[in-house]
Image (cartoon, rainbow, N blue to C red):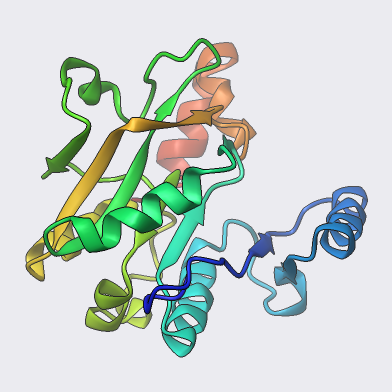
Length: 214
């Protein structure tokens, strides 16, 4: 999304070592819908998750285009007007670094990771808590203020650190409590569902294999 006023987004889908069947489906959708498909298996041999590489590639593209970066994770479904509404807030809010849409379950109830927002009635919250990357806009100004090449490669996930870094750099982080997106937790990380079906295996993956380093 161009930061100069053009909100027409360039869409990129990062395919992080999906199955051959799903990769072929993504190729077909890419041709049909006109988005750019980045197959990470063509870029790296590093196994999934490749969040760091995706962030670095996306930051580079956004800066080159003079654009903001909107991240939508694969377990999130947005509405047709979600992107436009988030983009509009960039010029309306005070020094935004990150702007996130609140997540809900299929019944419309606010769910993880924004359970704390249930108690607020305000439309837009300025938050000190971390913002998830479920559906979050990173402003072009923030992207130009912190180089994602400096992120710790030993981690898997970076939303907590970048949220804190945004605040440390003097930006404000906002949660749009009146703009909802559907979040189906762990559908992009099915091993995390083991917490309910096989807790021993879940904690082995989490604590011993360190599959969830934040």
